[in-house]
Every structure is written in structure tokens, then in C-alpha cells.
Length: 303
Image 1 (cartoon, rainbow, N blue to C red):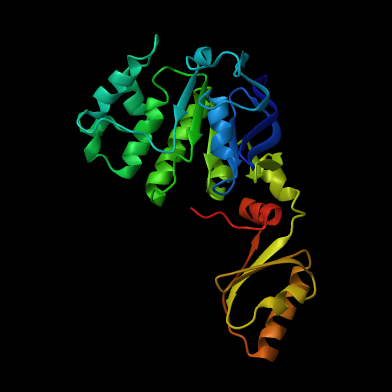
Image 2 (image 1 turned 30 degrees about the horizontal axis):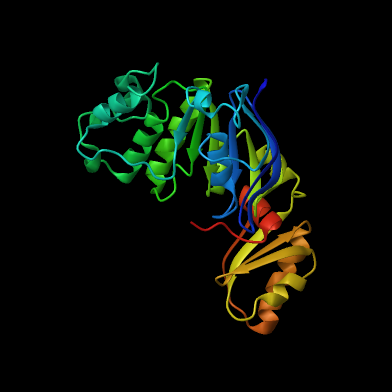
């Protein structure tokens, strides 16, 4: 596959804050490419520069062969954008909203086709103010597709949605892949990135700390097992147990990373017994993309 997005040494600062600090990456045509990271990592700023909404200080940025820094107006004809917050006319129906937005482009897709794509056919004649949060998000994705773009930018599309609404949007994003669209996704949700993205970059403090297929990022985490449990009292001693290479303690929940699982398990229960600690909700699992994120950034993503 050919590269449809190329970014080289992209930089953007706000005073002393380096929002985007010399990042480089490419995106293949037809793939779902994701950036994950906490608030303030630089994800949205990166997307806004690629969308032509914000100017970069320096760097080479090409989207579908267009030099973004030189031809921002031309770019808008071939991309679709879903922002973190989409303002809609409350007294227009879902269909009318798509008709209004579609009229802003030289080419556009029929509203009924878009409503079917995002599973909103039954809401076509409902005012947008009557739509649920998940339905509004799906309509926002439909609005990003009105001009039949080559590349679709989705910025935190499922934040704040309940699990059912989130998975409904996952189905929409998977359908975009089958249509041959290139999808650029930012997300807080590790499960979302792991399930949907062909490749994902972990971003924090304006830098991309790692970039690869989700499965490869997890494999590069040295295939360590994660041992999780709740513990009362001082949990710091668990980090010194045999086989433990890394430990995370948060809100009374302990996660130990080990490549010597049997030795670590024995030591956990022995320590708990000798110190009178209660170990609850105990489980062992394989490493996940969230474990990779914690390892790289030292902090957990929060909404």
C-alpha cells in the first residue's frame, strides 16, 4: 500500500509549551491509524494541523499528495473531519442536517445512504435535539463523510458514550475500512485502539513514544504476564517480590508485571500471609495495550 499521509519533524508550540515536539510518521492508504494518549498529549493539535485548521511552526506535512502548509483550501475537498464537539442545528432533522452540510461541497453523498451507513435510518426525520449522545456521535461521523472523502479524521469519537453506543460506532468505523477509506483516529480507549487500528502511536508530552501494530507493541512488551489484585495496607512491598519487573499501584489496586509467573504468585500469597494483608479480586492475564501505555508513560489514561 502507498503512503497517503506523510509527516516529518512536525512541531507546534504555545509559548513555552511544546504541544507537538518533532514527530514523524506515515499512514498507508486504506488503514485505520490511531493515536492514543492522555489529555494534553498533542493528539488533537496534530490532527488539527493535518486537517488544515491550525498552522504548524515547522515540518513537512503531505496528505493525499497535498502540501498541507501550502494548500489548505484544496485539502478540504478530500478529507472529512469529526471534531470532539460538533454543533448542530437543533430544529433540523438528521436528514436535513446532512443535506445542509452536503450543499457546501461540489460532490456529496445522498443523505439516506449516509444514514444507513451509521444506522440512523429510523431517526432520519427526528430533530437533532431529540437524538441520544451516541446517535449524535454517529450523525457527526456521517457529517464527516458527506463529501465522500479519501481520509476521515475522527477525534475521540466515542468519549463519554456508554458501552453499547461505543460498540455501535466501532461497527461504523470497521465499515469505513471496507469502503477503502483511510481513518485517522484519536482515542482514550486502549481496547478501542487495540481492536480497530492497523497501527497505533502512543503519544505523550508532544512526542510519539512508540508506533506499530497493536499486537507488535504488546509483543515488544516482552510478553510479561500481569498479576492484578486489590490489597489493603502498604502495597509497596509487592514490587520487591521475586520475578517482579514492574509494579503499578493505583486506588488500592496492584498490578505486577512478571516473566516468572509461578515464582511471583507464590511470593504474593506468602507476603500476604506473613503481613496479614487481604488479597482480593485476584486475576492473572496477558499484557494489553494499556499495559504498554502505562510502561511508556508511567500514567493511566483518564477521561
